[in-house]
Length: 496
Image (tube, rainbow, N blue to C red; front, side, top):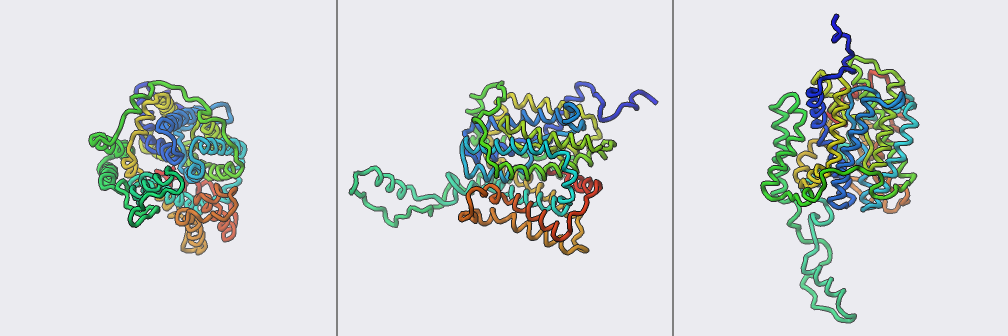
């Protein structure tokens, strides 16, 4: 038997050229998903283009740093030492958007980062206990939660296509002549009233030319069509980066029409360190921390199944200490994210699927991918370029990305027995309905205590709490086997 045959595939050190190429492949597969969350949260916070670009750079930097810790390992406490790429979890978007919408600007950012730091610390402490929580999160619960996450995020993708329902792209606006009359009235001496315009209405009743423009819809359609065609006719690596290719085609089209402006890219530096607390010291709110902690528990349950599935792909048994180290790194990554002005982190399942597709199981490939992400994060021009993308370009891609999250939940639920257990359908039905409340009736909490709004304004958390509670009521807290988790993770391939 040759020495090469004795090398553990997970610890295999590949030649530098091959290592870089394979690492870049992992980066490209996750890139579209990695940049989506800072774009969403930054724009809901109403940050400046420069601040949103910084969020993107910080996200890429921390993605790389946490990926290296997870794949390489850092002491016996952190890192599963497997080929894992880490990125921001979409599960955290709902609560963060809720906080951002209620508290726009840097204060909202500080609240979000405070909640993330607190949740990261708690996640590190409870990581060894997650295996005891698995009984509360069988596939009927995790599938429902991920379905609600996807459906909730679809609103973001749809608004990217047509326009945000408030502000400059609202469907209706106040007639400019009427708004001008009111402005003149406020500036005139008391008792002086200018002639009132005929049919004066100070409500938004005039159709907005900036909402749902045919041009924006056409650009989104081109992006979506590109993604569909690549998925249909491409194979292997190209199929895995279909969303990224769609965004590139859309960006080229938008640039050719003069819709992309590169002023911020020109002004951005070629190199800048990512510094902590860029927006000021974090604000720690107990309810927000609790909200984000519940998200982290769901994320770690997902990660448990993903690690077990990855162990099968790599031919390695995941022991309890390694599993705890991997889950603890989810918490550490989230803590680092909060310190460095970014968001909660988890393993990206697309990249786990890529390991199975390519057959390359070396963890050093992901370490290289992490290094590439760090370099990208240190180049502000990259963040500024992404920020300059018109939202219509992101709309076509958003339908796919967020729809795939919902489809992931459906796939997981596909392995649940609805025929023999009639209660499972009831659990999904009620939890899904609860999750839709903030989407359909966003003002439902107006008479409820303000302190609990961050908790109940998230349909994801309402659905999570409902699904867990109903599952205990109807099915009891039965043990979930590793096989169940492994199967759910494999079903979920393609979402995160």
